[in-house]
Length: 548
Image (tube, rainbow, N blue to C red; front, side, top):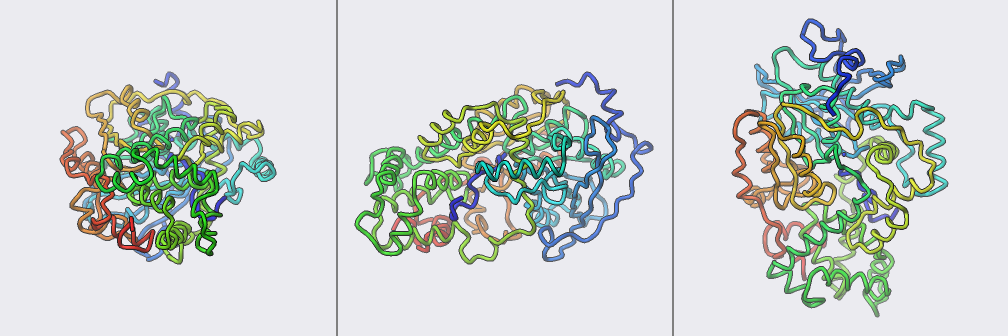
C-alpha cells in the first residue's frame, strides 16, 4: 500500500415479503413485542473508551450478548458493542439509532456528531451499535492488511477459520440485522419513538432489518443508498471513474478551471488523460532532479494517481483541488514542486495530531471482504477488473481487489439465506437521500430503491454537489461562508442541508418535507479566490492560491 494513500481500499462507502414471519418471531427476541413481553435483560451502562469519548462529554457504553447465529438458535454468544449520548431535555421524544457503512467500518465516527446534535435536539437520545465483526463486537481482525497479497490472504483465512471454524458464516448482514432488531427491542422506552439512520452499507443493513421486521421503527433515513435489489461492487471502480468525469465536466463549465486546464487540453477530462500519459512515460517533472522532484516522480505512478484521485473525488473537502493537482503535476515548476510535496505530506497525515490513530484496530478489512464477497459481488472476472482499473483515471481499485481475492477461490464465502436478494415491503415512512455525484452509490443505482419504497411518506431526494454521506457533506452557501466546512474539530454551529432535512423528517415523518435548503446548496467551484478554496489550498498545498 502506498504510504500516501490513506484509504487504498475504500469501504463501501458502502451496502421479500417474509412468508415465514411466524417462525422468525420465535427466532428473534420478539416481533412487535408489547412492553409486557419485552426481554427482561438488565443493561449496565458505563464509561466509554477514549476513541468514543476522549473528552469525557458523557457518552455511555455497554456490550450486550447476542446469539452467534440467530436463525439456527445455537447457544454460543458474541458481544455487541453499543454506545449512546442522551439528550438533556427532561421529557424525551425517543431514540435515533445510527448504523455505519462499510461493511467493516467502525461506528466510532458518529460520536462527534452525537455530541454536536444533542445540544440542538435535546429531546432525542442517540444510539449506535457496532456491526458484528467490527471494533469491540467480536472483531474479525487480520491486522487490517491488504488481502490481495496471496501469502497474507491465506494466513488471514487460516487465522479466521482457526478462530471461528464454521461459525465464520455467521458474520453476515442478516445476523447483524437481527442483532439491531433485538437491541432496539431491549433498549426502546415505552411510548417513545424510534428512528434509524443508515449510511452507505448501513442502508443495506437497514433494508435487511425491514425484511425481517417491517415495523421495527417509526421511520428510517437511508443516506447514500445501497439498494437491496442491486448493490454490487463489481462496478465500483467504473462508477468512481464516472464520478471523476462528472467533476471534470463541472471544471469545463467553470471559467477559471477551464482556462487553467486549457493549457493542457481544451477538454478537462482529456487534460487528465494527458497527465496520466506523462506519468506512464515517466516525464512528470522532466529535467528536474531535486529531492522534491524525485519524491514526486517516485510517488506518482498510474495506480497511485488514480487511487488518490478517487479518494479525493469521494470527499467534498478534496474535490475543489483535483483540477489544480492535475494542473500542477503537468506544469511542475518550482512552486508546484513545493506545493505537490506539501500535498503528499498532507495526504499522508503530516504532523496533524487529529489524523492520528483513533484507538485500537476498530475497522475490519476481513469483515468487509467477507460480506462483500458473500453478498455484494457478482463475480467480475479478474481480467475485466484489471482492464477497467487500468483504463480509469479515478479508481481506488475496490472491484479489482475483490476480483483478485475471488480469483483465488480460497475465501470462505457464506451461502445465500432467505433474505439475500430480497427487498423490504414496509409501510413506515422512509427518507432517502443520495448525492448526484457519488462514486460509491451512484444516483442511477440508488434510485432503484424507489421501486420498492413507493408507499405514502416514502420519498427520494437527490442532493446536488454533496459527496458520499449526504448528512455530512451537503453544505449550504451560508454554512460555507461561516467557515465551518472542512474544519477539524467540527465547530458547534456546523450543519448541512441533509441533516436539516433528516430532522425535519423525524419531527414530522408523515408531513411534507421541507427541502428549501436544496436551493442554497454550495456549488462545486474552482475559483481559487473564494474563502473555502483558499482554506483548502492552505491545508493541502500550503499556498493561498490553489492554482499558483
